Length: 76
Image 1: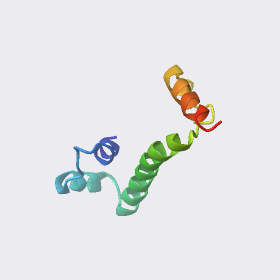
Image 2: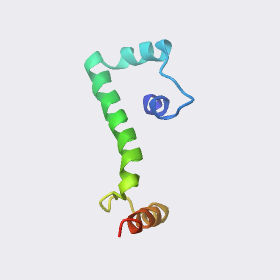
Image 3: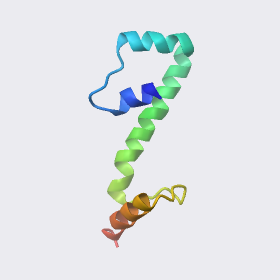
Image 4: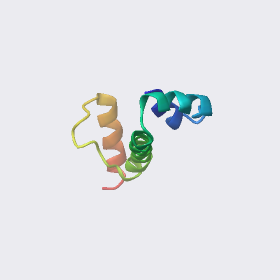
């Protein structure tokens, strides 16, 4: 989770010290895969709302549903 936070929040960084800690828990291949998945999810979280792409009903939070509906209305 900390890796995801450091990759997501602008004011946080993946330092050499933190990366060394990660290498004690994960192989290099696992770190590449994990980082790619986190980066992809960050991409989707920025890209999808531009086009009103919804979460396919997987997220039923009222706030999310209302924001998705508002974004979708712009394209109808």
